[in-house]
Amino acid sequence: MKRYDDLVADALTRVKEIQPWDLQALLAAGRDVILLDVREPGEFATLHIPGSVNVPRGVLEQSCEWDYDETLPELAAGRESEIVVICRSGKRSALAADVMRQMGFSSVSSLKTGVRGWNDFEQPLVDASHRTVDTDTAEELLTPRLRPEQHKPKS
Image 1 (cartoon, rainbow, N blue to C red):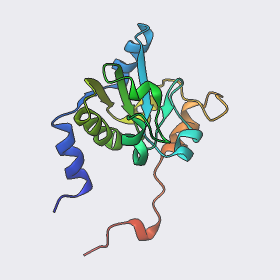
Image 2: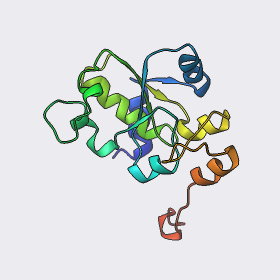
Image 3: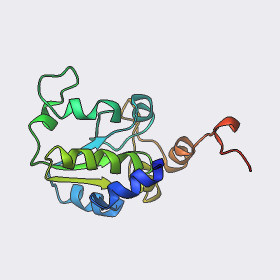
């Protein structure tokens, strides 16, 4: 039986990852890159990379195709576009990038370390109102908050 981290590791054998500084260099160079954030809408509203679009992981495949309620035209028409997939830590984005690769997207990569790494690299993050969120506040917002019942039982 495969577990979540096994699925991510398997996807990473096929997916290109880029570091936050690589993405910063692409953006600074003026490259036409689609920043695709696959986190849930609430996560995205709280904090995201400026200029990114939100397509939750659960509707990704439909968003990449024409004729669905979730169709995002820039994705449906963008199989040759340069796309960087983003999540909080780089795991969901790796899975999403792998699916997109299978769907024929030729230039898709995953942001290694996700929004957390972007923040650690001290790059700008904004909230739903496009206000810049400072690094310390972002760190607090990005810290996992597991409830006791979500921890693996002790043997």
